[in-house]
Length: 289
Image (cartoon, rainbow, N blue to C red; front, side):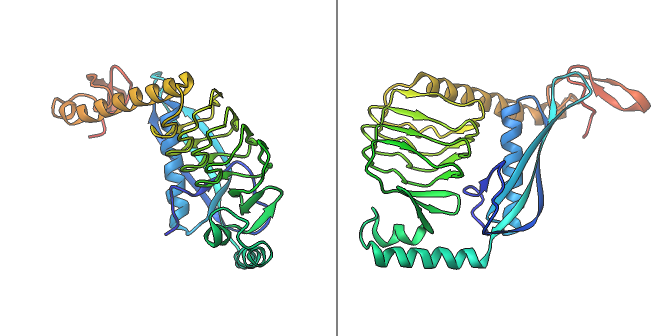
C-alpha cells in the first residue's frame, strides 16, 4: 500500500506525468475545533487515496458546514482527485537518474542513493516529481522554485545557507529537511504549509526569523530541537497540546456519561425533541446510543 503519511496532498494540479484514478474525500464530523476537523479529514482523504494505490491527491478543496443546533460545531469535508505516476514518468525518473550519475558521478551529497531518488535537476535542486530531494547549490540565499510541494527528508541537511524562501505551493516539510543548517537565520514559509515533521530544523542554531502561516496544522515536537527559543513555535505546540488534552478528556468521559444516560459528547442532559427524539440541552446533539 502507498505510504499514507508521506502522500502529497495539494490544492494545485499536477499537469504532466500523472494519471487520474478518481475522486476521493475525507470528513471531520461534528467538530468544534477547525484545526482538528481539518486534520481528521486530511487523514481520511489520504487513507482513501492510499487504498486506491495513489501517489498524490490534487485539486484539494474544503467545505465547512455549521450544524443547525447552535453549538458552533460543524462538519469539515475535503474533496480531491487521486492520481498516480504514469509508467512513462517512472521510466523517465530512472533514466534521468542514470544519465545524471554518468555525467556528474559523486557530485551529489549522499552518492548513488540520492541520485536514485531524483528524477531531474532544476538549477541548484534535484527533484522527484513535486518533491525537492536535494539542494546541490552553493548560494547562501536560497529561493526554492514554484511547483515544489514537499521538501524531502534531509534535502538541505548540513547545507551552508543563511536564508531560504519557500514557494506557496509547499505543503509539507519532511524529517530532517533543514537539519544541521547552523548558519540558517531566516526562513520564509509557504502560506499553504500544513505540516513540519520531526527534526525538520534540528540544530539550526542561528535561526531567529520565522513566522508560522495560518494554514499550518501540525508541528512535530522535535521539529525545532536544539534551536534557539522561538516564541511562535513554542506557543503553537503549547496550544496543540492543550487541544489534544481537552479532546482526550472528552473521549475518556464518554463511557461514564453514557452509563449515566447523558450526552456522550458534552455530558449534558437530554430533553424531548421533535417526534420523540431526545436532544442534548447543552450541545443540541441527538441521543445516538
